[in-house]
Image (cartoon, rainbow, N blue to C red):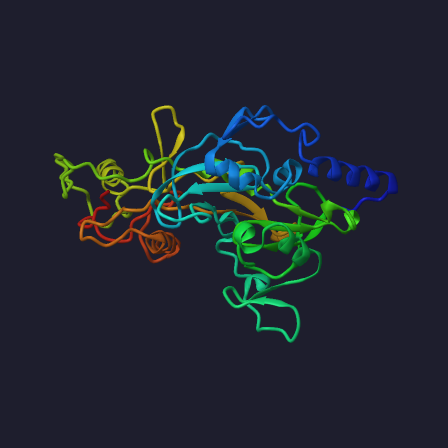
Length: 360
């Protein structure tokens, strides 16, 4: 959002590195249990209460660390992308825990759909459902199968509760972590599993993606969510001594047109006085570092994919929700050679006329 290893010694070194990287850091010396909480010196973060109980439910310390990873944030309120509601949340290297006091245990702590997010928008063959096979394990909920070492791992370490349903079949994919390597992977609602036959017979034959570490930068606090102040007017009125030359939002390239467009039409991102890029209509700014942007394909087909997650609660002045169709419409509008758009400008997000202003 690559070439093979030519020498055996190099290959063995890479395998050794993979094994070392996969080992839980500090697994040999678990920190002392501190009552209802546990502080991890590796990250300086503390896990407590029901979050700690769920984290420890895998069994011994090493296994729990292997499945969930270290905590990488404190517990804090965050906005859930799926329903737009705010929950007490804590991120781990391979998981995101959400507190749901409205549910009875064990469903009062739910794991985030990290696999769904990272695979969102993919419609290539492995992500298309398949008919129920004559043999094997098939999930009617997503119409996907699991088999082999991945099925064994899935059943051993928590099944649907820990990983969710499969959302793809097994397929080969270039590794994000090891340059030049391709592994068999399978995506689940909450995880991505990676098959390592070089580790066959060991605990590390199947490795989990560090999706929590990859996505933690995409978190949104209630402060960044759209909340309409009680004293905000429904209509935005601008007074200027000069009218724009035309009423089409992007066809007027004059100073007054730019001025009007800047006030009336928002974009996915904006910049502050220090030229820093900030989210506007988007929930966060997607980057390669936080997993919102990533490269796919190889060679001449390699290209960057950028995924924007829109804020909830944004509506047009007539009450209609602002959604991804508005963004797509605008993008296509800018690519239409018959539309009189000033050249060399980034598409912004409005498909309707100036009488339909997005308002929080």
